[in-house]
View 1: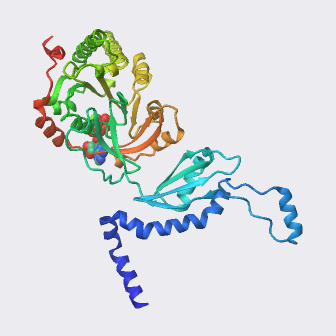
View 2 (view 1 turned 30 degrees about the vertical axis):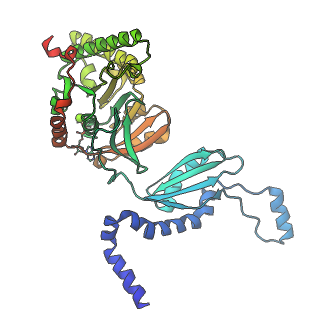
View 3 (view 1 turned 180 degrees about the horizontal axis):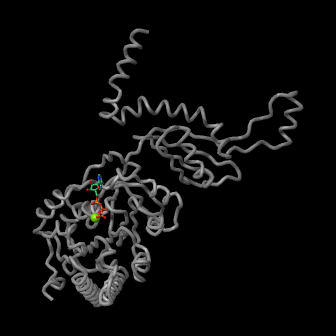
Length: 422
Ligand SMILES: Nc1ncnc2c1ncn2[C@@H]1O[C@H](COP(=O)(O)OP(=O)(O)OP(=O)(O)O)[C@@H](O)[C@H]1O
Ligand SMILES: [Mg+2]
């Protein structure tokens, strides 16, 4: 008794420190057993409360009433639950659907499950026909992501930029999804994500091109590693036109070699991949005067062409902006449609989240709107396969500058893009 009391009080006192130091061990030894007990204990009432229990046939109830002489009728059937398996920061559970149920019924019940089990979040996905997979995370894994930053070049055009909610690495792979749209309110983490992307691409054999019409405040940090940088709209329009020409030249090259994309060319003939980064798209599109309107139109058309042709020809777009609504001009909607990868940080208005994430999934929109200002860098990612929460690595300006300087010698010279001289 005394030993147990001493142990318990010791654990209570040292608990918070141990928990911070060994979060996984703490969860497995102390948190998980409690939560698993809660899940087992509340399973039946929870299923019933969420409308996921199916009552037995009325006839059976009547018969049991007669036979049991007033005994309570049989309880409704609840979906069968598999083993509750712990993960590093939560648990996983498979559940067999009852006749007449679809996974969406369980998706709707996910918030109630999270409340009942007192965990941070519950996600439900369809595992195979008739079975759903319930994944719970005890605490928000994105408060303190533990995925190490990428060191070294890694695979061409593939960069680890942060951590996913599942604990896996958040990898941006431009060869798989060539063009990206990054939205978010001011100070939500757009430029930090671009920093992480640039820091990962800098050691690779790629050309980086910057368009930063906020006077170059954000992207000029990496100037030594950029093959070209436009810091106002006039330069941007010329740079984009030069990029379109470069893309068309590559198209001719591929046609002559009878290949469908630059990856089909022999190694020594293959032109270097070009990643075009646009920080604050609104600066390109918002216009005050007539002449600016023509410039904005030209910029928009060039970006759309790059997006349409670029993927096969090794030209990739990463476009960031606070808003991407049609009020910026007619070209924006068409451009948005071409940017397949979507990252939505904290947003100021639901419309922006909707535009970034599409109307794919109302849950994704809710998750994006729930991002708090102190969680800068947290974002919702959407692609054809669904959505996920993630957080970028915090790469400070000093780090970004240091990376750019370190790899400045790798900067490819693309003389056709030197627009300042035009
Ligand atoms: N992943 C992150 N982890 C921790 N802090 C972050 C993260 N991303 C951003 N922050 C914090 O948020 C601040 C603002 O981020 P950032 O400059 O990237 O915002 P932004 O969206 O580019 O804003 P703006 O639209 O004003 O340019 C950063 O200085 C940093 O302190
Ligand atoms: Mg910024």
